[in-house]
Amino acid sequence: VQLQASGGGLVQAGGYLRLSCAASARTYAMGWFRQAPGKEREFVAAISWTQGVMIYADSVKGRFSISRDTATNTLYLQMSSLKPEDTAVYYCAARGRGWGPRAEDYDYWGQGTQVTVSS
Image 1: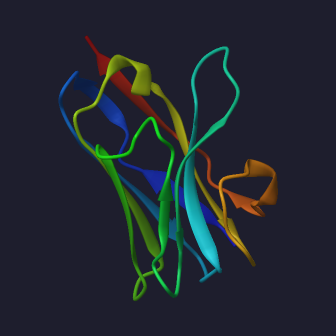
Image 2: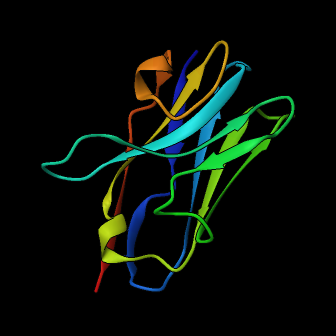
């Protein structure tokens, strides 16, 4: 499965961005992770593809929204009320079974898209 993320950019604090991730095939679940300079990769949000059940990291609850288009196998992350601490490379990931927040359980990864939030 190939994943292609897009939509990153530079935005001011309080602004919004929408990330997209095009998948070459359907998988059981997909998620977004991010990695800031000098920090470990962290979970952002995930969604089960068929049921659409979502989970979020506490740090983004109420500000980010994950969704998917089952017709085009595209994953989205709508980000609003962005903060400088949201600055990171954002990665989309997919897994063939099960779902959850652990990066090590994801089988496929996209190349990442940079999100920079200025204060």
